[in-house]
Length: 243
Image 1 (tube, rainbow, N blue to C red):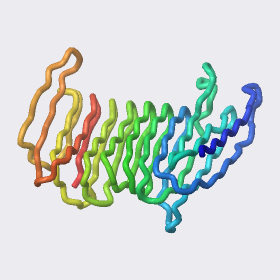
Image 2: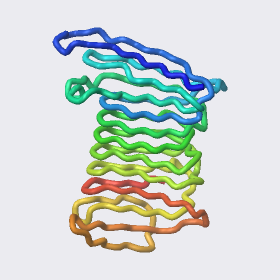
Image 3: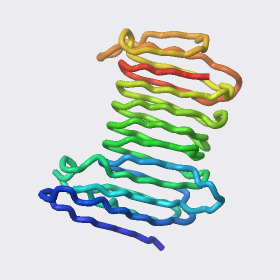
Image 4: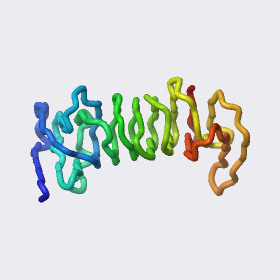
């Protein structure tokens, strides 16, 4: 049985100083979270108890609408679907907060807003058009963290057993192992001549990749015996691997 919760807050654009409104919900037995957000910052926090429940809080802003919330078959979908033209009128101070148990699969798409992951254990597929990603995470599956124009900073709480990629289209991307051992195939890629690669590793290969656009430089090395890929990439920005 599928439960759908749809909340709509109408704010006329001529109204100035409309007060913020909060929406709070609890969702049990969720295995997957899908976010499709337009203008909203997101904070995802680890639960401090053993409850198998997601706590949801949306702090609204003037000229904002509440998202569509859909729950069914262990999947929670939160979607800011607006009519054409409404996106340009939105404020950027709406905030979404999720407090989650371990082991959630996250699929996150955001147009404009920052993403913060605080001690979260799960698998992550996250892409931001505009905004920063800052996360302290432990991965339970292949994970991808990317911002088209913002900074991406990921710190690991434990060693990797799955593929991971950290990318920024034009800014900085950092993967911090926080003292965890590296075991896998490391590849770092940036625009040749304008991008910067920072790493304490001794790379075994370095290549210049020709393309119709900017050329790329790639540096790679295999460490240990795990067959997992650890990838950092940028265009003209800076990528850093920290031990």
